[in-house]
Image 1 (cartoon, helix red, strand yellow):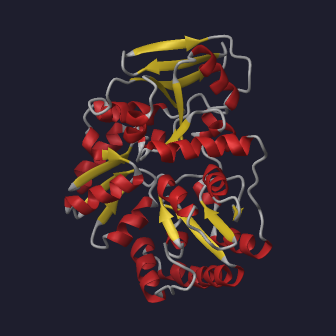
Image 2 (tube, rainbow, N blue to C red):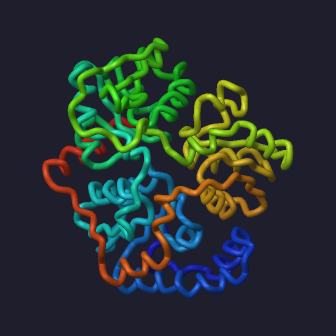
Length: 373
């Protein structure tokens, strides 16, 4: 993680931006704003954390970039008074939970997540009522209120270790069904004696919650749900759903560009795996995907995830050509250079989490770190 004292090589940043954007005029417009942000961070004592799906203009000046797990870890190391989180709302909440002495700023509180919107605390209570013996694990892409109702958190990077180390024999994963199914398929021979279920979808008309038992290949219906309903039918990532919607598009990209390697995120549809468009070895977390490219030696990569991950890959491996249908996350894109400047100048918006939600949600994250050991 870069410290406030470590200076940025602006010539290098300029070269990277041009290499990614291919627009010299754009680079000259944004560079002064980027420099303003760096100056404000130094003046105000602020650490900038940026997710891999953020615009490259923010990734290239952040003190730390990473996936959700890495940013959770790095948030605990911050020793400046302020953390400016360039990501979505649940990520900023996690930073606050892990380093409550610091003031966490989120430049736009409307930066939500379709995964987080796919489950509610009331739904988890209903699931637990019908499955009292099960451990309930929530993907890190969930709100603090959701985290407060589960036993532990998991990420796509640490799920196998969490599943192996949790003592319960029956485990329920939520809320992203694509992630859960892909994780189960990839890990089923490596997790010992676990029965794995996951939340599949909500039936708005009949008020039913559907679970899938991945181990047995069966589905369960939980009726008579009366609590707060989700905003979406499933807890899937809409970006990866869109990328999965047209297998013919993937074929056309393969035929047109002849890539050396195809990679995708765990959140893509399992149907793409079943139908042979990718193998289980070609999917992973965002950090996994970067490592896949590094280890492969590939020079032309077709990437099936939010396209700003390409900026991170290009930064690490400049000679790689990234090919992508380029679906952008509308929530991640709410964080702009101008909003970061405004947030640093006004010290707003500040992330707060009331009790007892704070303590319960922090416990779930702490349990994740304990189960990773």
